[in-house]
Image (cartoon, rainbow, N blue to C red; front, side, top):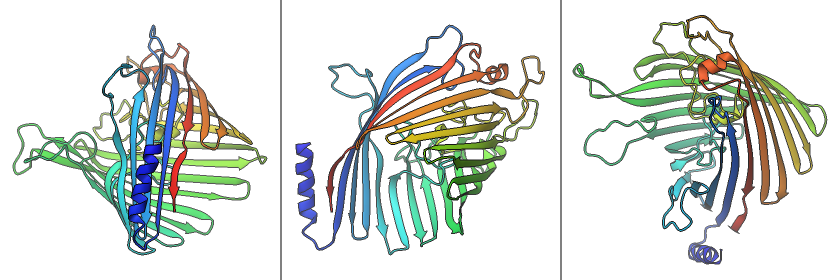
Length: 423
């Protein structure tokens, strides 16, 4: 800590020789989380033993601002307790850059940002930080922003490669290229956002390749739609609709996602709500090669469709879709907060059994309970328990054993002190 302060003071002394005002702050995050996984993401197979582990994230955030120049550097280490020996000379995951970007504000309306950055909009259904993941999510991208008092327009683009090469190589880590436009405005009491996203994924064509087509081909998929929210004195509501078209892995895409949520504050401490989301999919009886299953792409999917992550968290892609009807109850009392959210899941399209007979669309019910307590200004403790009551249809889709007790529990401590600030 003393060494860091000396380094920071040296930097500040050097930059303070000019006449421009500077702002610099540094904060640290240490976030260990214990998890008990007994049917997390899918029903646990018969005879398997539940997993238990402690993961941890350590981050150092450095923020600097001077006149029209803004920059941010976030270094992090993500680990599981015990993944290296106690006498190890090196770390399994080492230290990585989560964010490293520079921004220039041309004037009060226009700005540009370059580098590794978080891209997050609205309720994070399509673009999100995925903060639940210890590693989070960030992009190498360029961003141009225009904003005024009531509106904002963001134009972003990215282009990815495996590394510096002398000839083209197939890129499969993520999207090859991305361009998007996000527009947000206020229409009276309604906040509305419009999104258009174009993502390209590269495929290596198999022989024989017809000329003059190149060996590598990028298929582009378009995601477009709107998110709206509004609120009154005791209530708030939001809805969204997104469609998808274009191509993915040479196949045509035609999918959509629609949802509505409503919440009402019964008292100053107690709030209740309900919601419904429909994500399109494809019937297992269909012979079409088209992709009809909606993909939330870069969204914080852990926040949707149940905390046990049975759907759209690295899974359920190109499946039968989903209907999620849920209730939400929250209670806040000083430093405590409690939340209860039951979900009823149904398939959005036909599921067939091993004999090609149609099964019930009812997948199961999940009960999520979470709580948090503010121990200190810099310390917060959260925890949760979830249980899935799956059906035979769920087992048909996800495997495992739905007759087994499938549950998940976790406890997380978030320590987030500001260790230096200068203005």
